[in-house]
Length: 204
Image (cartoon, rainbow, N blue to C red; front, side, top):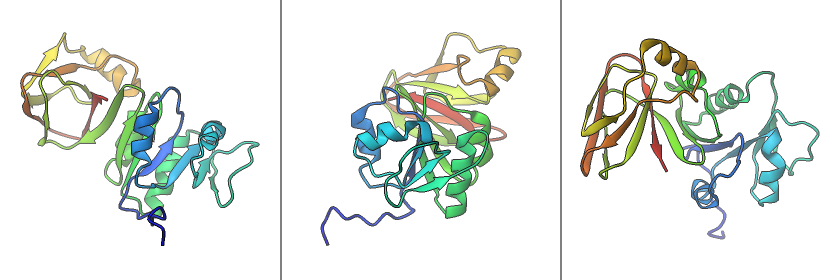
């Protein structure tokens, strides 16, 4: 068997491309490195196909000619929960999502069943549990979404915390500025909080 024929195991995160935009080709190549299952939104399909990427499934296809053996995921409404449901039912443990905007509502609903990492052109966002720690170099910037009552180690807030009204709005509108924190010195940062998992964003 050729070394290029990689058996795709569900231990590897699937990749869902909702909209590619100006996403880094280098990072896209890294996400494709282990030949993940690739799912694409119908509106992004032609661009992905033109890049020579094998597409395993298309969600909400519309008047497009698909690659041979490409499956379809049909349904009305938002595409993301259709894709996440598909992956959960198929037994995938994780997915990387490329999209300019993300909806914390859907991510929260699936976070107990699926590890979700969302990438845009400049950041990646993912859910964490209380007690999560990770080593980061000095001056790394984090944004914290979805929970204002949090204790952090080796992080300093930049600017002021949003008031309750802004925070409630932010919970449903990801474009509202989230609190930003800067790593004080090289070393581990830790997040401690009560309640549901929260989401953190870090710059790519």
